[in-house]
Length: 363
Image 1: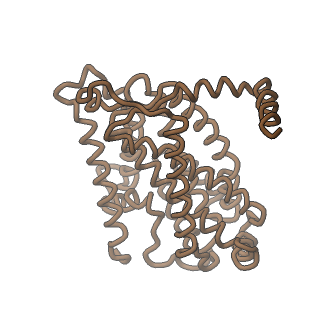
Image 2: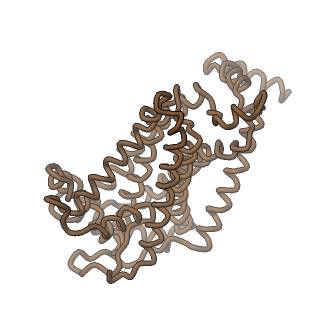
Image 3: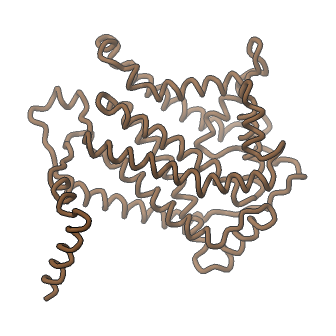
């Protein structure tokens, strides 16, 4: 009786949703199996962490109040009075950091394996867009607790935007909602964080997933050249079950981190107090922050910080254009150029991040 009911339900849903068509696509899809297959799981891991962010973020919205007068107190109430409120906030905070970490690792794995080659150029571009959105999620969400650390770190971060030539002053005022970080800034960051960014992320994520399904997983040249008759595993259920195991592992790690190292609230922001000594941004901005500190006050006729911001902007544009710069016509002797550039970028980010956390706060 139960089986007949399930069969009738499947028939009813299939007639309306086309489930059999999805089933046929899933049955045909496979995943290459080789020594680099482990990197294929990073995309799914990032997607899972994003879903955790959405789920926990929605729960936090029930209690959060986006104003300078009530933001801090609403989170204080959430953590102290709401059952498991502290755990939800801690999972949200840890998932944000892990998601950005997996996005970075996924980016560099794609870069080093040259998975951006034709016809996957637009897949790469949509991935870079998702990286930018992930970092913006972190930047806008950092201010929302309205504590001392978040307030002054946001002030420092937005001041960097202000040094951009010509449009910097306008962008700074637009982002802050005034000359300084205030309640208007909090309201704007809240709107960007819970409305604009999720909408943009949904669009780019849909495009990215569609292109990944259309073109399949890229196989590195070294594998194509060294293996006769490359093996493959079915996406459903083999690869999907492995993906689910990774998701459950990530969930266990998240719960452990949230329980052992819960997110702290700190002291409420007071704009009239001086900034604490050694104020620093989140880890994913640290290498840029530290780079700007090493620059002299002026380089030729420009401010040093403006030159640094311009250089990072150029680096971002070049990263976006990698599929179009690494063309067959310039390969051969320079085949490994972009691999070495990727390794150099990884080393630069790691070294500058370490220096940022170990430097003397008074420097």
